Length: 441
Image 1: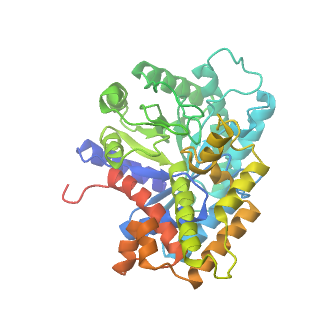
Image 2: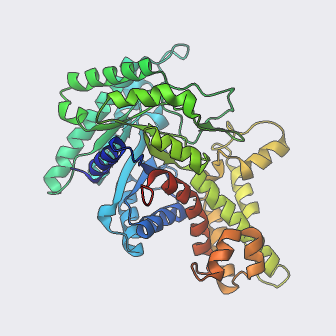
């Protein structure tokens, strides 16, 4: 049994006892985010689920420049460095399917998606989110993609995953079989491109139809054992975010779908786009059966937010002193202007509005540019400047007030990377508040 299966069995047992627990999924490949998540795992003695998304990490390197095998090793090396036991780290693949190949016809997109899934499983990832909900080039753009087509393609990817696992098992004696997450009402990675009037909650009949379609597609391919390892289904419980808006969880509106999942003993709901929900909204989601909470852009938004804060401290502390400053925000803006492919279709309006969104949008398209060479050089200079010239309490209080208190009480080192990771950790704490069993409960 994989660590993920064990965790979800414990979650299911606890929820049947009325305890309302779950697990959050850190969907990011950013080093500061990963370090923050691993530190929280160490601090709370809990498993940490880390998932890389298909556009971040793929067989060609993705936008972070890592293949699945390299990313797998990278995360475990960070765990070793931070003193986190490897068996506490669960690695998953998010939105695995034809996401980044959707501009091609099915005959081209699906072989690429199969290879993507194959490399994830061969590398050792044990939670596989199969996402075939997007249309490819030869699908009718005017017609909703039928569940049967989504499920057929999903079963095709699952078959590739199972073949890859058989190969891995022959090489790694104690390899554990992957678990799967399916679903056809999958929010797009990174949040909605446009604010909507509202978010339609999945209907129970649609959940039943989706699961029946996937079950039939899996069994028709002889994937009975794999079907027994489907642990969660993605639905829309009514949460989403756009560039400036957050659609908060409404327990009453989600009640029909959260009750419906209780008919399926071994399944839980997986909530996507839970970024920016309040900790109390997240807690209600978990109590209602949305046992896996996925978060990504909110974490890199916190990285960007923290870097802006550190640059403000740097400027106040060091301007006019002869030391070259990082100019991080300006360098980031210039990188985004040089290459607009990651934000152009997301940010609209006037030039002033677009500039604002490039810096502050909740969609956080800036995360795509944190791997840019010049941006990374600016971050390194920022960190070096503040390592040599630590921030005084007054500036920490101004720009990172929670971290200022922890520095004062010696709970946190006054070191820029530590300050940044701790700031990201505050977002993670909201998810741990929502998912962990309450003390005394």
